[in-house]
Image (cartoon, rainbow, N blue to C red; front, side, top):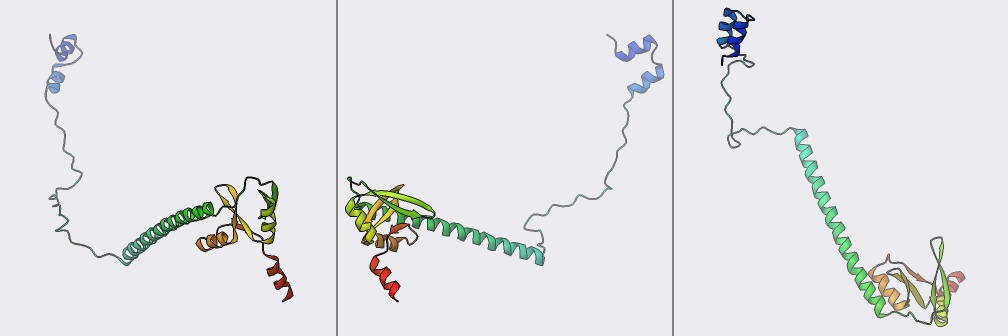
Amino acid sequence: MSSLRDQLFKAGLVTKEQVKKSEEKPKRPKINKKPNKPAPQKQTKKNKPKRELTDLEKFYRQRSSVENKERQQAKKAKEEAAKRKKENNIKIGRLVNENLLDTNDATERYNFIIGSKVKYAYVSAEQLDLLAEGKLALIFQKGKCRVISNETAQKIREIDSNRMIIQQKAEKENNVADET
C-alpha cells in the first residue's frame, strides 16, 4: 500500500514540491515567556530568614489566641454546669422518692397557679388541708406533680434554688407582715 501522500500525488491533487515540504519536519519556534534567568534555589524552612511580624499581624494573632481561650473556658464552664445540674437532679430525685407523700386515695383537687395558667393535682383530704396551711409542698418530677414535706422542700431549695416548688405561705407569716 502506498501512503496517502503518494495517492494524493498520483491523483494530481498535490505537487512534488508540496510532497517534499510535507516530508520535512516543521520546526517550531521556541517561545520564551520568561527571560533566561537562573532558577531560584528553594530555601528550606531552616535556612529561610524569618521576617518580622507587623503590628497588625501581632494584634490578630493575639486576639485569636484570646478568643480561643475564652471559647475553651466557656465550653468547660458549660460542661461543668451540665454535670452539676445532672448531679443535682439525681440528688433531688433520690430525696423526693425517699420522702414522697403521695397516696393512692387522692380524690381532692388542689388548684395552683404557674405563670398565668391554673394547674391542679389530686391529693387526699388531709393533704389538701396541709397544703392550704403551707405545711406540705408540691414539686414536679418526671412530668408528675409530687407531694413532699416542708423539710424536704427546704433541702431541695438548698441543693437547687431555681427548682420550682409550689408551697402556700403560712397564715401566721401573712398576719405578722400585715401588722407591721
